[in-house]
Image 1 (spheres, rainbow, N blue to C red):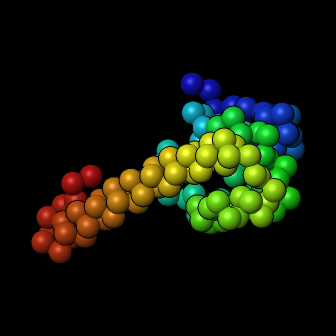
Image 2 (cartoon, one colour; image 1 turned 120 degrees about the vertical axis):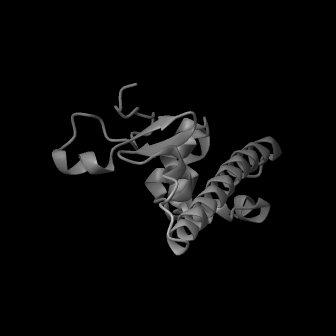
Length: 141
């Protein structure tokens, strides 16, 4: 699979013809997730709370939530704010349609679930690695 970024209708993902300095920020959208160069899927989900507004917008575009990209951009919703979004916040932002709110909440819940799963896995691997160092055994990986 080629690591080329995919563009969204909002133009939030740089195209391959952009300047070399912006290539570091290049990302692609795969199965509704934002992939940054050199980042594994697990690392991607672990970094969700530190996503920028652009990362959130790219994720939304990949999930088919482009209808609300401008609203999330206007309200500067980054990864931490996205993880804490609820009905009241969506209403404050002007998203009042029940089906749209439910869709947004469902997608955010899926993202949170994946984040928690990856965080627990990373904690487990860290514990195994530390345990191996304390006993004098070589790490498992």
